[in-house]
Amino acid sequence: MTSEMQLEVLTPDKVVLTTTTPSMQVLLPDGWWGILPGHAPLISFIDAGIIHYQTGDGKRYISIYQGTVEIQKQADGITRVLILTSAAEEGADLIEAQNALEQQAALLAEKAKEANMEFNQLRLSLEKSLKNADISDLRL
Image (tube, rainbow, N blue to C red; front, top):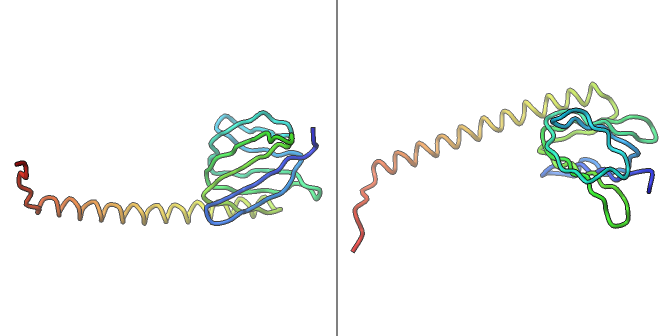
């Protein structure tokens, strides 16, 4: 068994991080989980929060805004941790990671609000069109 595992963090826009690490901690719905090389396969939802991982230089942080984590055992025995999220930032400072998380949450909340308004406008327009439509019985 190797002493490190692969860690990848991906958003729809970019690859945030690709590295190796000997250990990491992630907050899952049932509490903090430590992940080490050789961990059993797992898929779980991740709520907004901070992920901690070790490097040769010390501890580093990734702030994420919701997503999934998948732990895979590859054929060569390497453990791969894949994190898919809508937004993420990586850094060496916990305070910066927390600030980045708050900024991501605010930005995504604003985008969700805009999308909801656009959806409601389209829905109202469709309802108005259906009320004004002259739909007759086309059965022969």
